[in-house]
Length: 105
Image (cartoon, rainbow, N blue to C red; front, side, top):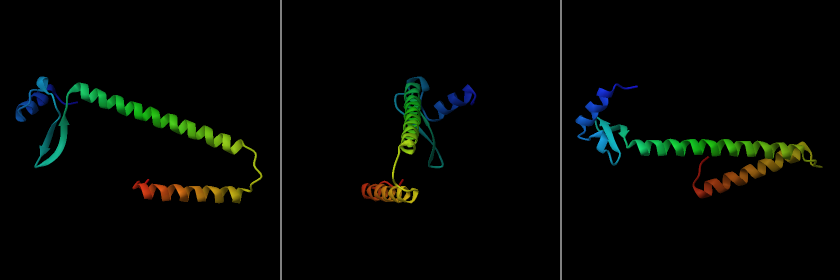
């Protein structure tokens, strides 16, 4: 972690007192942004958002896994080849919709 004096030096160099920081300050080196100083409350808010997003992703993966188990355990009269063909068609349909909506993933 940086020494406190470096924070003070940065604040002086950019003319921003960190105690009075009301909006993000972009630090640049040779015209390229390299870091951002932001109010600690904003930093905490962003960290909370990231934790919540991670929890949502984790929950979605668990739900997907449960659906896959349920699907695999469901009796069917389809052959494995027919199931694979259905999956291929579904993937193609999703791909077509994503491309149409401008999404690439």
